[in-house]
Length: 270
Image (cartoon, rainbow, N blue to C red; front, side, top):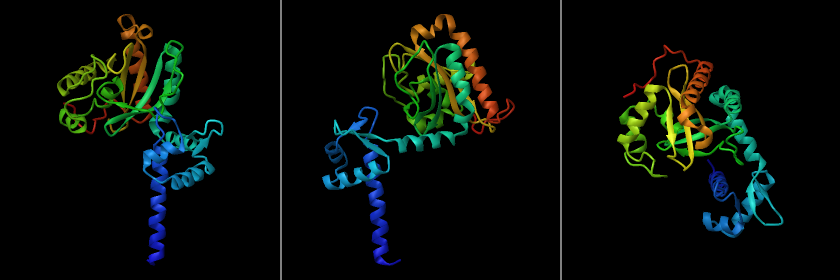
């Protein structure tokens, strides 16, 4: 390959990496950024950041508020996210079911899958008793402190769980299960009854129930949950009712993904 072409390819790769680093600087905590912040966060020069941000704006990856001078994620990113979600079989199969469940129960209904050591929300619908002013779609969460996470790990062995997330975990509240023995006990309990629980483990005043979703091989590929404030969940009175409907709908999604109850999961539980 000619030397000039090599430089061109290398420079193009570097520009892509730099542009992506700018996009990654936008987070839930900081959804808007100034150019000066992007310079500080990425370590790139002012002129480089200004040039790349200008290109990203022209392509719709970021938008610019002329009045405040702040940049935020643009519609092109949202469009690409929609394409990615629509390619997910779990998302396609569960979207209407989760929406109907939220409407029926008046609670939040969520679908998540596991990405490495975290859960990733694919669907999020809110019922009248559990309103939110924001969507959970695209957000990540801890596996150990959520009902969804426990359901997603329900077909893993103790050794696999330890290799995945270790033996000690962050405590978000005094009720968070923060060690491997406690987590294994919680997962075993959930596996036995068909659904996992979360009671103020991630946030005060909130509860969640989650059931695993399996594909045709029997492997857990996603989880369905119902969640909301403690007052709306009313677990002392409604837990059995909620669990029955949750498991029923999770099974329906699994069936849509080709799962049959006689299927043997790829990894043995233990």
